Amino acid sequence: MPSMVVIATTAVPAHLRGALSRWTSEVVPGIFVGSVSARVRDELWLLVTEVVGNGAAVLVHPAATEQGYAIRTVGTRRRVPIDFDGLTLIRMTPNPKAKELQSPP
Image (cartoon, rainbow, N blue to C red; front, side, top):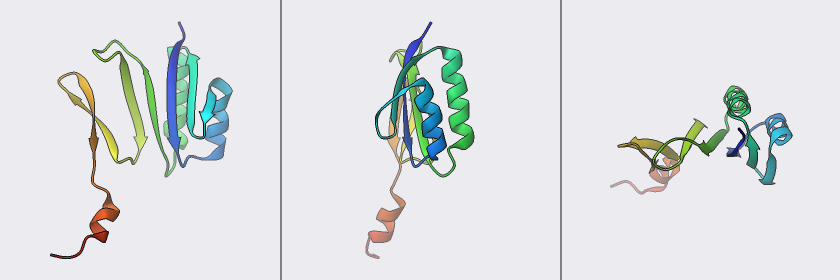
């Protein structure tokens, strides 16, 4: 049974965006929304993880969790999903450039 998925991409190769647009709609640059089966969703995510390169991607899809959805990520991002007693929360990691901009003590 098809279900809605959202894939957000940052700095990924153009051919990946083209592959994703075959199954989903790119509603704004880098944000793909579609209604696909779990098998197609998993195959699309496998493709994303294989070719993301230096970019990053996030997949949000329905799941049997308290929140009703699951989050998968690949690549380096400042926002990292963490499990907290069964809930997925987002932890912010420090910006490496912010340390460089700080004056020495």
